[in-house]
Length: 237
Image 1 (tube, one colour):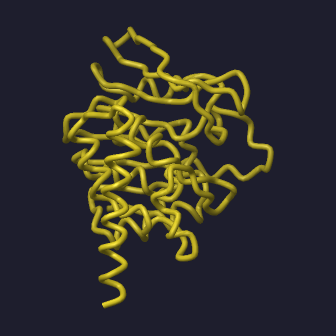
Image 2 (spheres, rainbow, N blue to C red):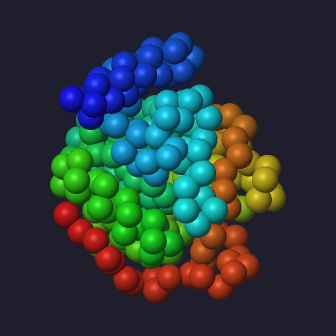
C-alpha cells in the first residue's frame, strides 16, 4: 500500500512538473509533453535522492555526472523536432532518463556512455521499466555508433569544443543533431545541426547552456585516462 501511495505521489508531481516546468515555459509539442509525463524520473535516481526527482534542477549521479534539469531534457528533445518513430542516437547516457524519454518517442534508440558503471546501471533500470527499444552501449560517444547509422536525430548530453564530424556523418539527410558547443568546458551554446543534403549542413544557435564536458577522441581530452574501449558494447535490447 505504501508503495502504491508513493507511486501516485510521484505521478502527481510528474504531471505538475510537465505543466509548470515544461509546458509553462513554452514547450508545446504533444510528443515531448506526453513522453515527459510517462517516464518515472525517480527510478533513475538513488533511493535517497528520489524526493528531488521533480525539482526544477539537475541532480548528481555517479562518476561526477548529473541527470539534467527536466526542462533542459525536454528542450533538447523538442529541438530535435520529432514526430514519433525513427532511429535515434543519444551521446551521454548518464542515468538513462533522457534515453527513456527518447524511447517513448522513437522506434529504436541507441545511447552511448563512456563510463561502464553508468552504462550498466542505466541498462538495468531501462530493462526493468520495459524500454526494450533502447540499446545501451559502453563506448566513446564522440565517435557515434556507425553500425546503426544513419540516425533520424542525434542528441548529445555533454558540451564539446566543436560538433564532431563523426556524428554529422551518421545523421540522415533531413535529420537533426542537437549538441552543446563552446570554446571552454564551462561556456557553451546549444546548437542544432540539420543535414540538408549529403554534403550540406545548416547550423543554428538555440540557447546558452552548461553541461559536463564531452570527453573522447572527437571531444575534450580525457584528463583522467578513463576512456573505454571504443568498440565494447555491454548491453543490448
